[in-house]
Length: 210
Image (cartoon, rainbow, N blue to C red; front, side, top):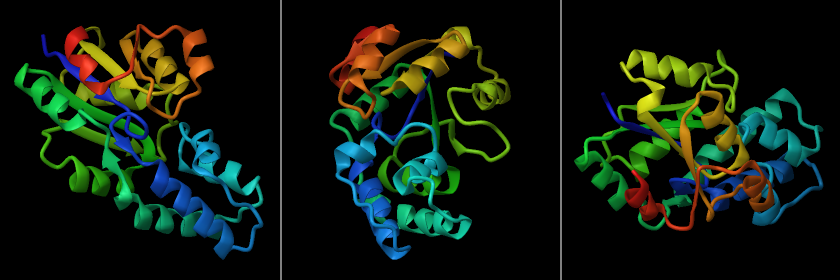
């Protein structure tokens, strides 16, 4: 039996909201759309991939080239992001306890890889996977199942950690228990209604339930 934990990224491991908000507002200004948003509003756009996020921000007025520009700005401004309190120490302790660690995010994969290398490069994740255009985004679990098979893992031995209803549904779709972080970007009322297995205030609380 190989114990493992699969993590979401935005709002779970790293506080990316400031950089995402900056990327959204800069891009909208550059393409001449009259919308600007505060972080609380952009937070409601997060969870189902960058393309949907930008479509919501542009109110479906974007052109294909506009999304390409957004991705450039998305990468440019992501490095202001930092791990949430307790993330690094908790991940190291989970490694010490023998857990295999995975990241599965709806963030574009190329951007995700660079961000993890920069901000969590000291952690030995067995797989870091962002959105792949060949697979539907979470809460679809086709890509997650593929990752588990490739690494010889069984979902019954795993635990899923996120911050939103999308993450609850992802865990449910593959029959894994989940913990949701209250400090993340998910809608609190929707999360409570979906009844996650655990709803935690501190990232380090994972060590008490795993």
